[in-house]
Image (cartoon, rainbow, N blue to C red; front, side, top):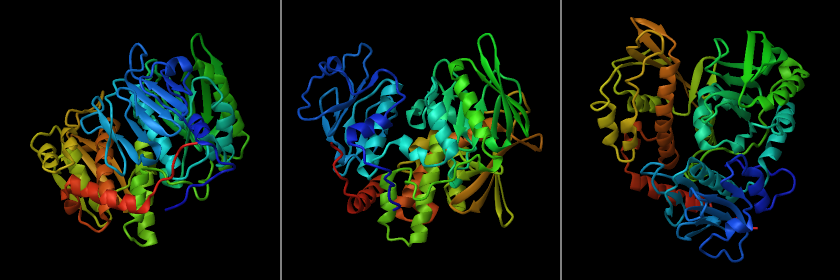
Length: 508
């Protein structure tokens, strides 16, 4: 496996947590105060408390999670999990509104039912941080980003210091779901990196606002008129930026080679000056230099347990490297929306696995064509989810969650009724390219709403198929791969991860 890069002096664990655990609500307290700790009903002798997540309305600390320098505690019963044992998660097999578990080499560690989105998001972030530490990461996220290049440094120094601007590590899982609607289209395989986010929604859904990457700006604003409701523009295409002030809003008019584009900030109007300074800083660079290359020896992203499993399969370096790259692509697709290049979206699955995956989302195809390069599948809408994808999914142990996936109810807003979804795909290095369109009255047309719906279902199926590939190997046929029961997959994953990945202690 590619080693984690260490930049400069190593941070002690408590400082590593502080620098990488930001941007969450005040109910999540980093280095909790004595009055909050006094509410705990169990001792934490010899351990320094780092993060307290209180999941109660009255902030009584009766339910929630505590992270210390040595362990993770359930506030409800004081159950303790040593940080060196954390491998991944949290997982919620019965849904996020129920209790879940964290992966450990000794089996699952139960975590309590958490009712608030911020609490579940904070627990997820805790596990991410601890797993990264256990796999050798010792530097802060800002330090890692600072190495990428001048565009990234401009974001760190200007945008990250501004009000209403979220860092990538400060974006909760709930916001990520909204942000995916307009951060999609990033060139993940080439290393495009998300740098900062502005959430323009009043309720924190994250589905409108501005996303800055190391090479482009993505904007979604449903209140604006076309072409300003959704766009992404590479920095290389921006020629000038003009600020405008309204009664309640601040605007930035971008003169681009694609025509004028407008960013309107209302909820985050206080960030307008910083955004303007960022653009002006980037505009000082020659257009061909307005992107930062992927740094050498960048750390692997994605599920580290699966990366470890890949290394235990005894594959050639080329095949193992290919699976590692697919895991990274899957992680980026899940985090920031499906990547894209030249009109083709990225899937980490091989063409054969993608052919097996699509019926879980759309039911059995009504038409199929292969021209030697591109596979074309047509799926009828509306469809009977109950007799098609549902029965197929429920027949496979571990894939029953796909039974509720389906988009038969969707039509294109203010447009013709879509009767058929067309999916084209072709094999490419590290996965497949995929393009989703609609057919209405025998005419093919772009259908963003349907493409988004297919994406939201497909990413879950891709996750499961890729997980099984990393545990069971790349040679098994897709049908055979999916027929292996969950217990056998879990046992094999445990064998591979324990043999390859003894985790160091996190404390200190």
